[in-house]
Amino acid sequence: MSRYFKIKLQKFKNEESLLKKITNKYYKILVSTDKEGMISSEGLSAKIDILGISGKSDVVIIIGTENITADEIFNNSPMEIDIGLKTTIMFEQIYRAYRILHNQPYHK
Image (tube, rainbow, N blue to C red):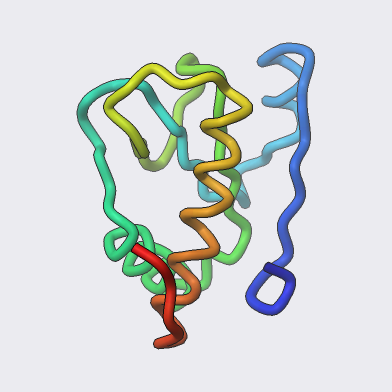
């Protein structure tokens, strides 16, 4: 993934410590279990492109809590999924989105 972007996975003990770390400079995307906000690989790719064009290069993706105000809410599966697997899926989807953006092949 380092070919396309810098990424860092951080775990927090509680929401307060997360909120101290993320400032207003971040565009906050919440990965929710809500049925609303389903996004496809192509939709995520388009969203990443729009964020890049708009100059919002600092994006934080929040998984594991639903109590934080976010700029956008995504759902990557209609099923209830363990947080570790949900994080893995999100990483894979971000990678796939960048492959789409660069017109490179990816597996469906």
